Amino acid sequence: MATRASRNSTNPDFGVLAGRLLFAVTSEFFAKLAAEGFDDLKPRHGAVLAYLDDAGVRATDLARLSGQHKQMIGTLVDELEELGYVQRRPDPADRRAKLVCPTERGIAQMRAADQIMSAIHERHARRMSREKFIEFKATLADVTEYQRRRVARLRQA
Image (tube, rainbow, N blue to C red; front, side):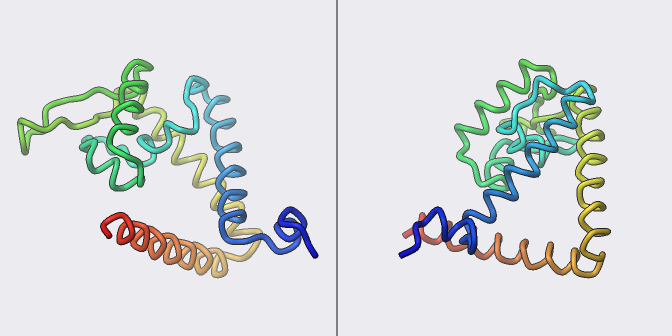
């Protein structure tokens, strides 16, 4: 009888494949960000930085988009604010709400991150063909969103 370890080395399940991809992309991404001068960032900060816009984003939207709890987003925003990447500002559409807005350093990080991720995508598109990569990404997005909806329904039950 095969062990889970041997089975996941020859025929990995969905979670193992997703985890391997996440860890491999994250490792390369943050190493390249560090080389660009953003060595104070940690992978956990990606839950905020991946969804940050020039105009700012509400923390509740960051939580929804990233799939993280609001309390975790609050902690991450505190850390990023201390590091100089973001600042909280009143939301002009609702003065009771705050927007998480990038600072100059945050905008520079966003630009560097976009270039790094674009290069990673381009490398895979060349390796497997642009058409296959587009199809792979669309399928991965579909599976991811289906799974997220399922988890959301389970939490509501």
